Image (cartoon, rainbow, N blue to C red; front, side, top):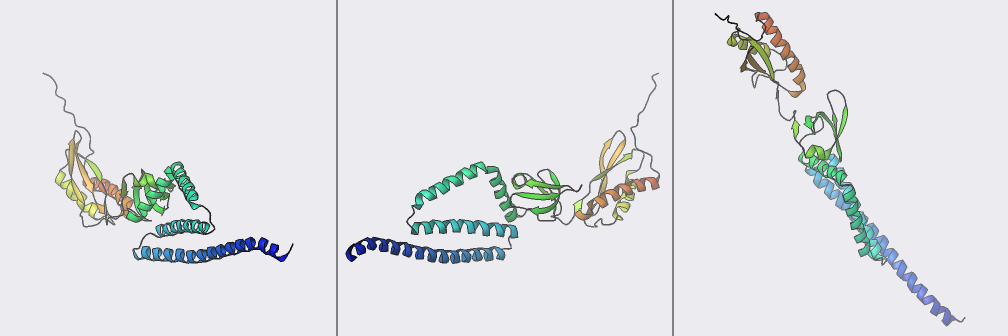
Length: 272
């Protein structure tokens, strides 16, 4: 085999090698530039979210999701450099995304609700709330579930979608919370005297706020006499202490006054 034949055989190999090498260099450069641009985009996004004081969990989620999305785009671009048909690949990727979305619809609903909870912030860690029928202190707000520590020391995990789609009651969002109690009184007791005694007793309970002032009024009448509503206000941290102390104050005030016990009163008339 002479030199001309060798040159003829080597020329296609050299051209192929040069083409592959050029594509490889282009792919490497595209990878390096793409990774730098991805890092820049993530830093700018994180800086913008930090400026708006968004929840750290949401920032981590957006950072992760943005990184995955941009890296997928980068890989598709690199494959196109090597001449791989990416249209079919992108279609398969989209179809797979739809299939996964349908299969994980419940999980994705919790994920979307978690993002809204972090943005809208109806509660924060440490708040005492009622959400999805669970009452307790928020221990953690996750992307898919929220952890609530109940008063009886049970750690409860609630799906974010169940929380976001229902009613949320935040007991610690306001400066004070009202304690609602009632006191059954005998009809023989002077209501003005009973109200005055209870107002003094309840106002002296530790952690009862003076504004708004405790409310003691006649709520209703019944066969046993009448019912007083007793409503002091306090910070949520002292709710149960004030609740129990108010019950004790009602009992002590009535005992000190010597009020008779309440009970139904019946009048019997003898027929003539």
